[in-house]
Length: 283
Ligand SMILES: N[C@@H](CCC[C@H](N)C(=O)O)C(=O)O
Image (tube, rainbow, N blue to C red; front, side, top):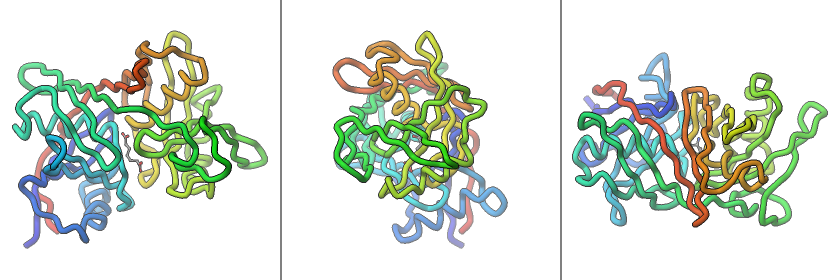
């Protein structure tokens, strides 16, 4: 019988099935359907998707991310923190400071230990991209992508950001009334986004704090999105609401992340990573 070992982990409730590809051998052509299968809450394990921890030629480990609809994503902030925890605790790396390759770039991870286990992880996520064609968003080129979408007779303004994957950040007055499950899926598949998009609704608070909810491309509502939190923070710094080099606390549904856009251009994310359970999945 075909089977593989897995670990279920979460970062602020954004949960994935992690597979150690140093030991397991899943066929490339099966990855998308396995991601759909394990993610199913009724007939699988139940998750926001599947993440593979793979050998890398250019870093210490490589992360591959599949959403729960089987699509492959280029980056995942919460996934990076969990991969870092897994890699350190399973001795795939020896140092507390190491590199993780993603499809979009190579990031630096620093694990923070509590009684020999990794409790918090800091990731240098690299530089955000605001250029319209690189996010990508169709239409006339802009250095700083801003646009509007008409939905139910109302224009909704957003800022586009890529953190290796595409995001549309909508600022709202009151997060409790954000149109998460209506405008969220509409924007995800809107023609402006040729690769579709992750959709964030945020409420800016005084003292470097942001309330945040997300509709993720390929997964729908999740409890948290690390790249989305980075996108929201840098968009608001770019708008002049907050300052570079000052940590911004992003309150997600699953808990808090600390995001700092440093004046050298890099975005830092700090937050928890948690192991839930391990097991064998039968295909
Ligand atoms: N949850 C993630 C992002 C996962 C991928 C995303 N849905 C996409 O398709 O780009 C995060 O924590 O960043």
